[in-house]
Amino acid sequence: MAYRVNVKNKKNGVTYVYECVSFWDKDKKQPGSKQTCIGKIDPKTGEFMPSKRLNPQQAAVRDPAVTARAKIVGPSLLLDHIVDEIGIRKILKATFPKDHLKFLTMAYYLTAQGGALSHSPPIRS
Image (cartoon, rainbow, N blue to C red; front, side):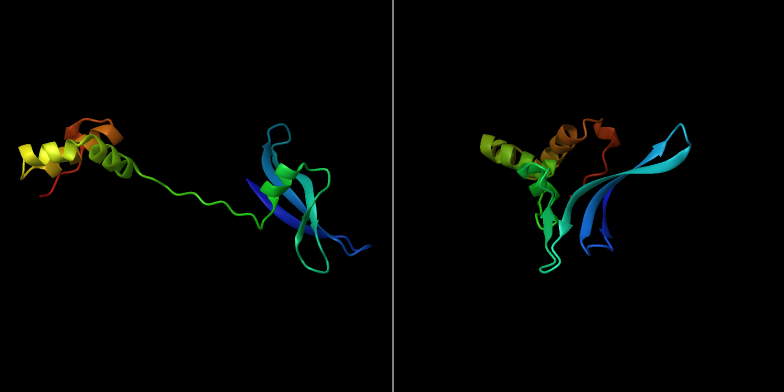
């Protein structure tokens, strides 16, 4: 697991930022860590300044001001889109007006889980 450590140099007053990775040393039978200097903190503005030896892509990834967002899309959202695009929902609704949602639920379970329908939770009307 990677984490960051700020170390202040007492001689020049510069705060360096290290990226540390912990690991278990099997030979010594004790934990260890590897530290890599990734930059420093500007004393005037307090902003992170990436190290010059890093290429620009690495520097951008390691900059704490850069954030990434991920949207988790579950299988039901994807399957809803496919069912509407193909038109299965309309066909099932016309054929089985009362039970079309049960059939869709079973199809979603089979597609997402891949297990037997006897293992699925009960479907409520």
